[in-house]
Image 1 (cartoon, helix red, strand yellow):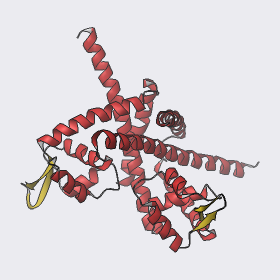
Image 2: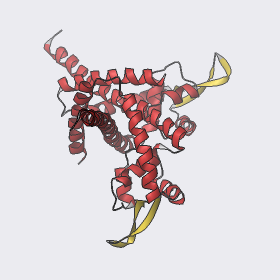
Image 3: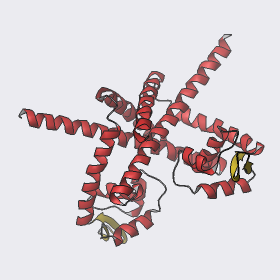
Image 4: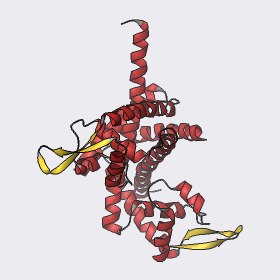
Length: 159
Length: 159
């Protein structure tokens, strides 16, 4: 094997390492999401996009405009306006006038929405703790740190 | 602080570590997916679920039944039958009789489908390599190993 083909093989291996990493990341996320989707349906008759939407509102007590809410969602593949309509009919969120912009409105959790979300979030945390329970804490911390660096890199990349 | 509240704090921290890990995993996956979705739309006028579906078929040259295809998809939120119809109309996949079960059919890539997928896969790999390029190779390998263990744990959990 000459130097050039050696370099080539190494480059290819490095490329495959990144691709493998992405596929593993996607597979793990997919497996956890599938578990959480099923548990939300069984225990709360709700969906992951609805839970995600309520989670974003819970972190923004002042309310969010629709565009900002869309941008913050972590789960794709739900019609945001449709979900807002459903949750509003269920009394879990309200649309309120935006004091800064009379033509826009803010979406907020109601008291009942906050109460239900707190219940769901506690259950959600216990599912996640159980799913990760086989990974030693030291390894979870190392994984956490690597993902933090990856996130910083990805945020830089997309800006 | 007495022993019990010390234990309590530690348990809570451990719980938060797992939840933080899950949210980071989800955020990184979401950022990469968003990047790949945009690049697939711009460069190939296609979607991530279509790309994912073709990727599953590329790994199964003998073809897949619809149920098996659904189970193998890594991306949620597309109507599989709808995507199969679109790709069939575009001449990229075919429905063929299943030799093992005359009432069922298998979905396969056509020659044109394999050709286009090879082009998309090469581009996809280069996007991923570039997105991960800021993470040192040694750290990518460590991350890869941790995710492999996590995947094994999650697969066990869901069976």
